[in-house]
Amino acid sequence: MKKLLFSALIICAVGSGAAIRAEISEGRWEYDVFLNGARIGKSTVSSSVKNGNYENLSEMAITLNGVTTTVTQKIVETREYRPVRFESLQSVQNGGQVTAMEKIAEFRDGSVILTEGDRKTTIRISEPFVLDGNFFQSELEKKGYAKGVSVTARSYDPTIETASTFSLKVSVLGMEDVTVRGKTRRLNHMTSYIDSVKLADFYTDEKGVAEKIELSIMGNIIEMALK
Amino acid sequence: MKIRRRADLRRTGIFVAAAAVVAFAIALPANQDRRDPMNVTVPLRNPSNRIYSDESSVYRIESTDPGFTLIDASSQKVLSERTSEGKKIVTLAAGGGHYAASGDPGDYLYDSSLLNLSSPEIISAAAMIVPGDDPLFAVEKAVKERITRPVTGIPIVSARQVLATGSGDCTEHAVLAVAFLRSMRIPARAVVGMVLVREYGPGEHLFVYHMWAEAHYRGRWRLVDATSPGSARPNRYIAITYHSLRTLSPLSYLKAVSSVGDLMITYAGR
Image (cartoon, rainbow over all chains, first blue to last red; front, side, top):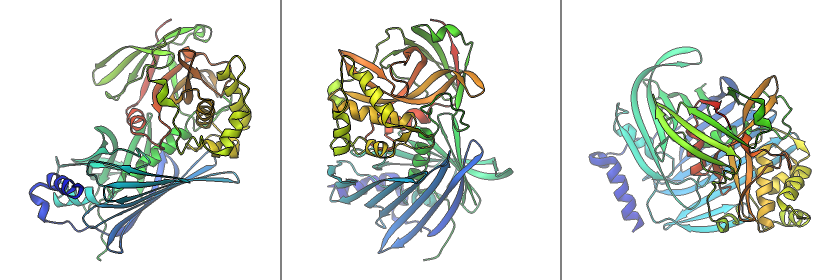
């Protein structure tokens, strides 16, 4: 049943382009992270194919007031974007002290097996969902990142909600003049929304490379600029 | 497989993580006199010294984000909300008996990976608290005594980790306070918002991002701020949203803090 519903979701999202599968790129991208213009860390995002599945690895290290927080997230999904595994590790280095919190979700037959430290729970989620892996990129690529295009899907991330999904949407707003590292560039503007609330703005160049990513949190601007 | 460089839209999650780290790291340190460049403040317009002695205050909060909203909380009530020229304007009464918080107390006793209620460390530490006539004050004091090293820049970490390190800012005080209160079977929850500080570094009358707790005791929700045991003035607090402490970035929290926008806060009388 879940597979059927999942297929329906993909078909709805893709529309007539469902038969065409976009090529998912492999690679590694490095970003500097800024808070209100001051560099506070770095982030690396990589994508690869391992054991026949897509594997996306995101790492971010931020230092604020001498405290370094490192967040690592790994997403594994099938070539058809079915969830396989989600891993998240947050470690905090505060002087000589290091603390870590790990969360692992494994997806089997409509269930999420969630491990948080020494707690293990099994959660049934009735609706189909994708992980925030390659699905959105694939759909947007099929549509040529054209102005006005939007892709929406239910998504699951146990660092946000453990027992439910949420709506994730990416919209293409079109070409704009944008300042990146002090230089004005003509870039394609895309925006992501979580349950209808704007989360982040992406600005990509003519090759489709995300040059700048920006989000506002409590009135503060977090910016990631491609190295 | 051919290696290409394409738009990297894959990982919204890492941006959520960045948002969570920064949002908690910019929060108020336990020692309010400390000057800290990472603490982001909002100056109060039309300030008055009487706010610091009054029981009740009214604020007008304007946000550049039309999605901005505030909650009714243990000691605040939203009086009105309107949108004008793309800005959201909320008028709020704080303190003075505006006990508008809702929520079934029974829903706020659950354990989570951030609260560690079943861990021997939390059970043992909570058991050492002598409730006396005012268990909420007893918890505030106990948390303050446990966190001996004020440090800003820490994202949200678990109650057990707070106990182990003995360091943190308001976030760590709030997490440990909720853990202790729930261990004592007192319903409790974490609140994310701002607090008005008379002097902060070189500035005066500034709202600073903050996190505290609410506990349901003797028939209603009450403000619990372990960074200043026994001395919290509810009319100086503005609650933005609750944090479930089930995950690092619960959806309701994420949506609320993403919609804060640039704020302008004006004192509008008692």
